[in-house]
Length: 456
Image (cartoon, rainbow, N blue to C red; front, top):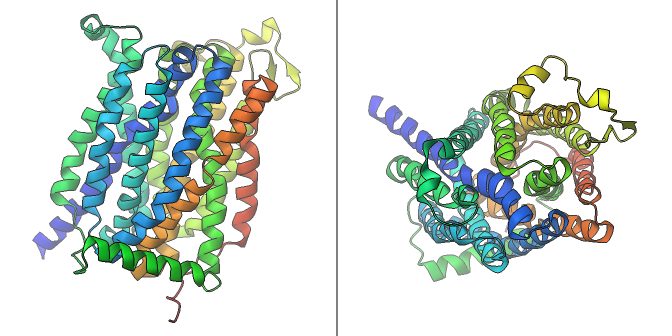
């Protein structure tokens, strides 16, 4: 019995550590360091950079949306999920390494590498999500999902510290080319991905083969997917949640996609300061994701998401309302106010380089929003495990990724369009609030109850 418990714990640990392994791509490359560098220096203009970055993310979103449900259906019909995760992770590696060669002006190389990395890492996430019900029980599925997101932020914070320390260690003197510090984010993320994927490969249990060949599994999976879509009225609650989640996930993804470039443009922060900002914001959800997973098991996934999304939406609105010249949209920032310190947190923020009152307010809003990111993402994933029939988990997770990405081009596309039309980063970024509010309202029509498989 002891060996069985030990193996189960190792299986769960390996599954959670893969999320830690993948976190630098999503956080360091796609949100903070490389995203800000690409928009500000590779493009060379903050407004145009936000436009190009938006269209790049929209392109990746379309590809992910078209393929994710097929991959999920294939996984259900074929059986094992680990091979798919490993294959797509391996394909992502050269794309992330290519970011080292993206110097100012290398726009097409940067866009191509980001699209390939984004698509393959999201495909790997489809399989990773689908394994969750296999490693967790009904009673602790929320805890496991929250634990994985806590480790996600542990990984991001740890690698951020390593990245910030590189100049002091003298490593940059050994590297050639401009902006070596920023370009190093790709290779660093690759090393991290490989290192912390090892426990997942060695210890995490997988389902056995169903006996179908890959072509047979694709055919059977697509047939099952077609039948599921044809019986959407039976799965109305699942469909409602997936659509609502798609809306607010699109908004959250857009916040992550544009936040670094937006703050860099609005406040004029250099990449290193963006890194410190990220380090502060990412430290908060290490603890809240873990606690959020426990709360999920107590009050349910739906209520956890509702609470978290409300606070996140308020925090984003607060960030948009704050610039170096005004607070909360209507209050001008005077010279005297700019020199003030935020109560309680101000002296700490000032020590880290955020000396002006408006940027301290923006950082405080970001910290408040960041505290609820992990619980929202973890409980959204857990919600699928709670409402999907056990025999359809991978398929529903494929649809989860499909609906999460089917409109994933919408928010980046609208941000790009509004930014280009208004020549204002702030106006473009504010579009995101529409998606967050709509998702918050839509959750009122979702029930937390498991669906039965539709009769044939």
